[in-house]
Length: 107
Image 1 (cartoon, one colour):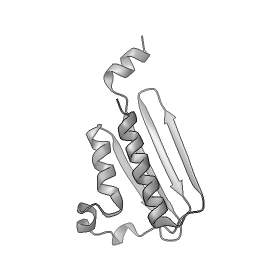
Image 2 (cartoon, one colour; image 1 turned 180 degrees about the vertical axis):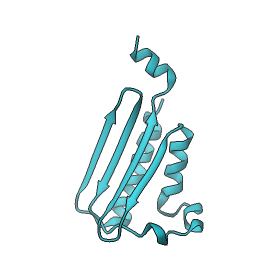
Image 3 (cartoon, helix red, strand yellow; image 1 turned 30 degrees about the vertical axis):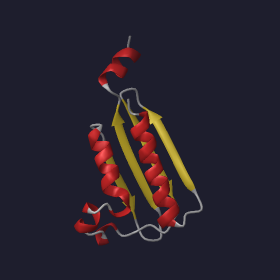
């Protein structure tokens, strides 16, 4: 079941937006492709320089990014983000449906 981990990931992403971005607008897309769920969250906040994030910062959980990556990987999913100072941030998560759910849906 991926609903609870997906919910926790959304909480972390929205928490980061509130704490760090100063965004006035957030877009959320949740798409079921049949074999996976795709979550995309984009804000119009201040953004940040990905190149300035040090490896040490990420390892310590800077911006919650490592926690989000770990949660996605625990579910055999993919986590990614794009951000540019002054242009907001986009976070993407792709989580495959567990085998038993795709088999149930296919009959």
